[in-house]
Image (cartoon, rainbow, N blue to C red; front, side, top):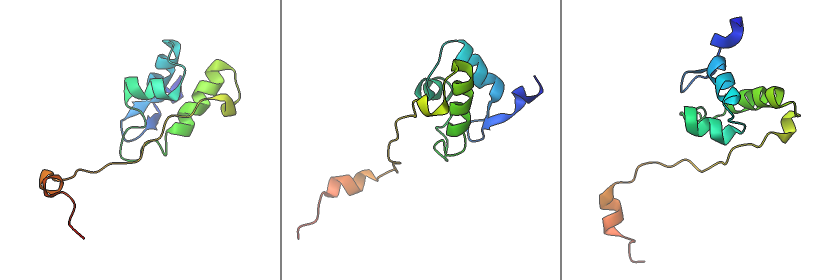
Length: 92
């Protein structure tokens, strides 16, 4: 198909063809697809691709998009210097 080369996840450069292949291989949740392909794990944390993957799953599974299980969200983290941890809490 002509649209198979459409980029679904811009952060991880995942195409519609790759998503469809994963669904055909038996990955039927966004979390499974995320773990195998890294789709949704880039800087945007799935803000752009999550709904696109959900729509593709719904179509392939023949269910309404509301029945597609959304992935587990975790708060973003950022690096902490070891020296900050070593100092501990300041006395008040």
